[in-house]
Length: 183
Image (cartoon, rainbow, N blue to C red; front, side, top):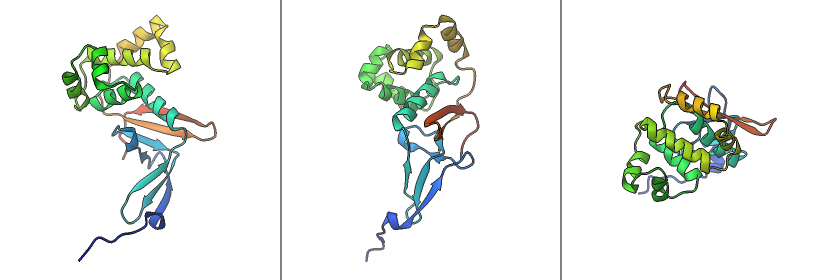
C-alpha cells in the first residue's frame, strides 16, 4: 500500500510578495542569512516547496558579494566560499592566492567560526582586486578610503543578515547587512 500521495504543485500554489515584515529567505545564494524584499514567490500548500521570481539575478549576486566585502563584522566560511565562487576560482587556486594549503582552506569554508582578522582582510582585498565590481576596485585607488575601511573591519559581531530590497521602479537592488535577524 502506497501512502505517498502525488500532487501537482502548480494546482496547489499560493502566491506571495515578500515584505520587510515577511521577507523571502533566499537559500539559492548558498548563504543561510540572505533575505529578499519586494519579490514574488510561490509556496505549494501541499508540500511547502517554494519558487521565486528574482529580477536582475546577476546584479543581486554582485550586490551580495559587495555587501559581504564591505560589512564590518568578521567573515565566516560560507561567505568566503560565496566570494570565491563569485570569482569563479577553484578552492585549490583560491587557497594558493591567500597563502594556504587546500586542506586548511577547506576547513575555513566549512566552518561557521569567524575568520582570523588578518586572513579575513586578505580575502576581502583579494576579492576587491580580482572581482569585476567597478565600485570595489575604484575604492582600491583611494588610500584614505581603504585605510578607513580596513580599520573598521571586525568592529561588530557576526549576527547580521543580508537583506536585499528590489527597487522595481528603479530596477536596482539595495543590499545591506542588517543587525536584526530576519524570521
